[in-house]
Image 1 (cartoon, rainbow, N blue to C red):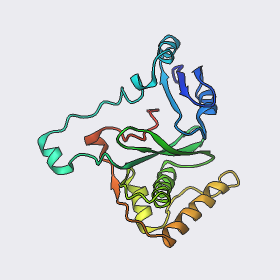
Image 2 (cartoon, rainbow, N blue to C red):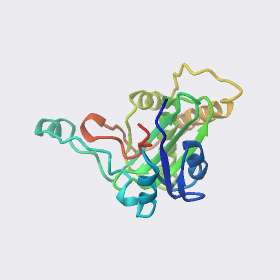
Image 3 (cartoon, rainbow, N blue to C red):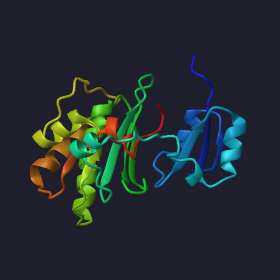
Length: 210
């Protein structure tokens, strides 16, 4: 059995300390710029809630120290960019995605939860959403994803998922069809780049649930 976790919501529909992921998710789902984090004990969560979220969000994501060879091979991530990520609960099938500004992890969009999704589908939709966001706002920012499959699907303008369409995820598959249609009908100047997790650490859009 998984250990009990406590969730702090600093910015959401309601704020406070919650004793389950489901109750936390109710406060952040669809809420722009939601700020939240899990803690192993209620005491730690309550102490964190009493402080500014900036002291905690992203603090435990240790970035690898780069060797000169790695810096030469991979360089450093472009800070003026958008980073996207997807997440899927393997137990419930609930999936979601979001996009953030790379330099400060400020959330600029979040979608979901969707029923019967996959990580690759979420990553694909996140990239296309970021491209649409940039086109709408006339931005030429690069878009980072840590999913090779999702990047390939976007470049080929097709989704090759083994996930089957069901009544539960029909809406999600409608979104996939709309995203593919958008790719075929639109041009964009934005680069789609692979986030090198092993070198740079977790992507800034990571949901921090590992």
